[in-house]
Image (cartoon, rainbow, N blue to C red; front, side, top):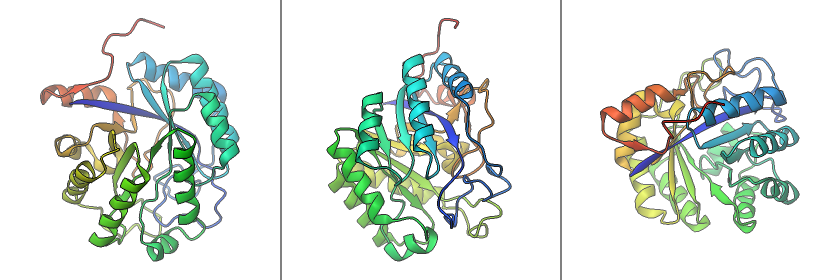
Length: 290
């Protein structure tokens, strides 16, 4: 198995949801350890970030933002697609409609991510009071209708039950998802869930194995580095994950924080780790100078 690497460009941490999700450290003002100050990346910053990852041999980037930032995300996609050969995943949550999906498709986006995070409706509404499970589910369905690849994943350790997880995986199978991020909760300081313990790695590994067994449409099982950590990367791959996300090269020109925790993966360190275990990646090791 060849492990893929997905890098990231966080376009904006502004979020139009008045009540932030209980675990969020991404949105402006949500956590002093996260993106606390509001930002929107400039076109020049986006281009430099994209070129740095392509020059490092990375082939895929996740372009993400909080609710209410579609125009900025679309501009970022256009820049990346015009100036690089990177494959693009877009993640703006459930804040997207049919017209916007058409624009993303026309711009060359390959994958749209809309994480449901949990199928437990009571838990979803309690932790994400201004978000909508039904709206997110509708976005997932629309993505497939538009012929785009769908990424939708689980957030583990937020209070869901084993039954919830099984039902969630069953739903992902019915949606015929192409990619499943398996994310283990890690608390961001300053958030309402800062005292909740992190999800155990064993739970993440068990769910990865279950997704691999059940969701036959899934071509990528993704582990975001911020939610699995360095100690979890190799066990995750051995359990069936074949994509590690939120990884940036050493010369990445922007300040970057993980969505699940402040840490992000550093490409060169991960490549050395994979080499030590004899694991092949899709990173092009030799690139021509810019």
